[in-house]
Image (cartoon, rainbow, N blue to C red; front, side, top):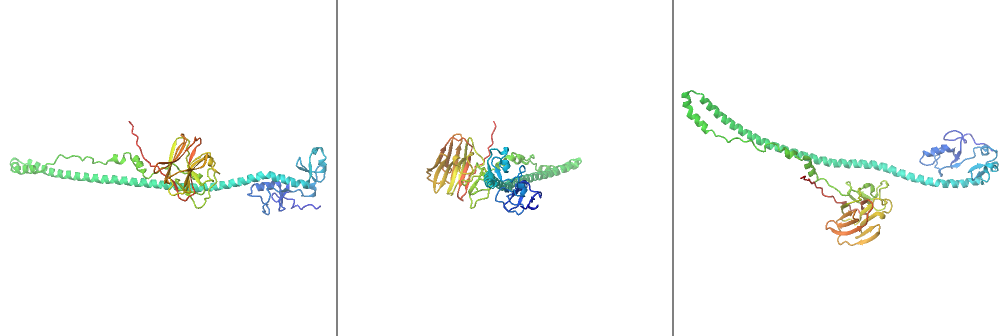
Length: 452
């Protein structure tokens, strides 16, 4: 038999003579290690020469480099047998030797197919794992991009909020400076008028005193001659009241500076709102749209492309609050308005976010004009409600083991769950309606504590 050409016996990757040669379905051969290293850096198995994708994760062993390489080095016989126990090619001499005593053998051609199947079976979990890793990597790539989008969006929102605060402070500063300038102008004008009046009195009195003193310096006869006129001039000069300093003439610094920061903060409460529950966008189902301030949600028209992070809910179209409760009493109100399909309640921290979360979910559901209560121990019970509430109050007494729903406008009781809670609970909202459900803002007040 004619030996193969030198080119056919060379590896296309390392250009050296083939070592442990392997053959692809496109009939290109490579050293086993060279191809393994090449594929380790590649996204998918393909021929390095023709780029044809391989249908197998690793190719067949290629034995026929030359006729001489099919011979046993020990016995110079054809390697036509496969030792099942040692999983290696042998010749007839090897089979009869003590080394392979008691071993099982198959014809090489027959063993190829059997070992291929075994190797394919060994590769199955690797292929499965590789597919999973590719999926997770894809999710990580998407998450990395989403992080950038989140950061840019959050920066913009922070800037907008601070812009509003800066505008408020600028306007408040200008108003206080205007009040100070107005007081300065009023009191300066008042003081100017006072000084003018005093100056006029000084001039009149000075003129009279000066003229009279001139008469006093005259000789006896002259003095007496002009005495009557001088005395009449003095008597006729009006004698003003004793001059008084103006009270409250100075700038009221205490009014402008006293508790300045507190006064501004107290006034700021008119533009500041507080939400007892803030929704966590990282948990929101892709069908939900959240408001920029994270206090309102509704179902969108199209599904958003969001990362499949572990916290994201994928079963119900729902979202949970950013803060959970594992003690104490908590209350929040939700404006449901004309929304016709929603669920409100609490979800445990340990409840699965992927798949059905019923095992840790207590909720009041409104759908098709009816109210139902659902919990881990109740798949659905009717809840009679005479009048559909516009706002629903949710009250959680974690320590007392109660979750209560009521009409926030009429304070009418709707339903109460009783359960011994052991896990952290998160406020839960689900809606499959485009009418927003909004968390009602709490009133902000400033209280001064007096010390005795």
